[in-house]
Length: 457
Image 1 (cartoon, rainbow, N blue to C red):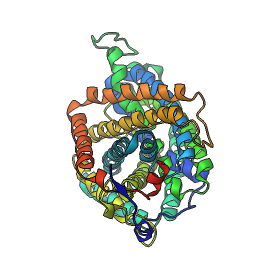
Image 2 (cartoon, helix red, strand yellow):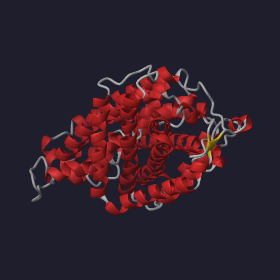
Image 3 (tube, rainbow, N blue to C red):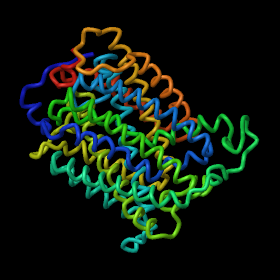
Image 4 (cartoon, helix red, strand yellow):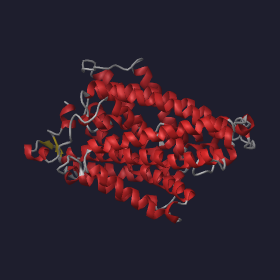
């Protein structure tokens, strides 16, 4: 590997606005990343494993995310920089490991907004807003609008995100109150049992259905790991990032339990397994359904909006350190990385035109689970090789906790191949192309005095 320091002018053009967020705003950011997963996406797991399969998968995935969050809380307190997972793996696994992790995160965050855009389109069409019947204009409008807000600066963007997220949580509360009266236990198991091994009314697709449902259970928590990407823009990141990410997980665990149980019990597992807006469909024609439909749009917008923030910071960090073209990390007068916001947005818009939300979801989960594997390996390696590293927060259970997350993340990664092997292999090919670029070109041009590289020691 070859690295060199850049003059101060290089980094002056690549500065983020510091001190813009406290722990409460970070908790809101964590919830915002994920809240769209309560409104749509998770329900496709009912088709893979039935209610029982998705419940078991969700319990396993929730435990994995708890372990992941606790591990990342330690890593983010010790290594507070905009690179998030890339920064952690760079310190533990070297430049190749760091770039591989950052690339996996970038795949996740570039594709997830495209999946969410298709769900937003479904909600807009179901509401009949503006007479829209073709999703592409919705996709274009939301990408243009929300990238534009982010270009205005992080302080403004995070405040808008926090407000939208609060509205989305109100929508879930309204849904829960309305759904209780429609709940029937028989609806949970109305998918007919197949002849698969272990099949029953509770597990209609047998034991393998539990495994196949894992990627969809992940949608209840997907992208919470993006909270550390705000470290450089946070006041007292060693304290506030761990507090923010753990608080966000607590809120998301509660919404996961309520949404999974009440949606399926109100609308029926069979009907909900194919719905583009399951919370609305579960309530049938009613005033509450209409209110949740409008507010659900806010939930989807919240995640779409915040994940744009996440992909821009991951791309910014990789570019600033020379792993990707350095022009992508130049910031504007409001300290927002212009091309790091626009370029993945163009790619995501192109992907959204497929209209295949469930397919894009699985591709995003591939990137996510691959990054989880590498981040948890990084935690274990740093505990073993750098016990002296200053850690203001330490993971309860140590490497036993992150080792558990590593095992489950590996199983979930394999499950993405079970759901759609063609889409997952395409993601694998993109990942391999990035690594080839690193091996042939960028490893010779790393920027030694970039903050993430300096933290690598």
